[in-house]
Image 1 (tube, helix red, strand yellow):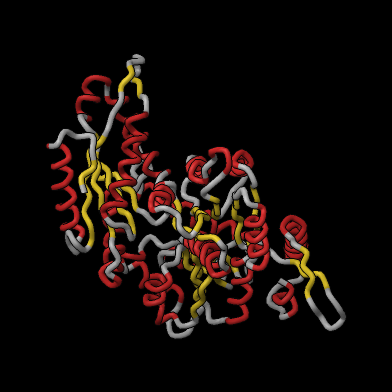
Image 2: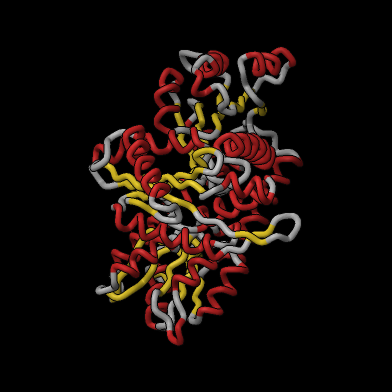
Length: 470
């Protein structure tokens, strides 16, 4: 803002100074809330340096030395490590805060378990997808690794802790967090303005990419996959209006929010923004607070629309087409690396009988419960979807048939232990049958894997239901 004033692009009026004061207040609050005092060497002796945390991670282990090592490594990596030395303390901290990841010890005294902590964490709606890593001895049993994957872990760290293992865990948590960051593409040929705008947006946790050449817009959109485009009206070679019309003529980008920046504020210019296909416009130079408000509204609306389109309303799992799209991308990668991948088809047993006997509301209750169970189990990278009706589908990344079958059997055991009741209070239970196919052994395409999984599902039904066939 001060640069804009000093270069004569913004009048040094009340609005400008209000923005400057607001920014300074926000900076002071951020430092007070999240600062860590470190001693940094300098020619004049040690000085204080303030660093902002990039991640917040819950670390729970009965060994104080492990917690101290996690805290020290976290400090060096700009990670806010929240420590818990007991199971109860870990559960209490999980219920109270928001975290970007969790590192949990597997073994606890007096029968405690890191798996119990993981399941409790992921049963909370706001932490249901939080990535988890477990700390165990190097000779941990295969059964512990299966249980870890079932409880939602993506990483298994072995004692003694190595810096590269901890770095990998924090990098993984950071990658998961970045994947959810709003991605903004700025098309403007003014480098100083791009730097100014990037600073505003980056401070709000947004991922920014910039482009000066409008003729490269389509290839940049394909590589960056932004959630929103900020587009200057006056550009070299093409006008912002021409760029927007070109984008709107491309089916893939017809719903991308486009926010115009313009120094022209006449009625005809504003009308031209909307006629070109823009969603909104702002005058240059921008006021940070207004820019952020408009960006957030547009992105939240688009994400809500995408979430509704991609998610099954009853279960919250991926809808069939969204699952297919995600699997096709996963298979394309696996065909390159030849890593294994398991595809599991699940069908509720005698579901028509549940509907006929206890009513469709009771049937919906069962489907919703299975959806929640599948959502809260397994790892962040595992795909879960509702295939249709009473059928579900799960894909385990990097897992063979035995591990996939073991994890599905645990879900089946949990489902069998659930007690349901219809609107008249009549109790009933349920189970499912499942079939599992393996890439590449059972096929290279999704169609081939689905056929193989469906054959095994049919075999499970023929063998008496209530089982998993791999």
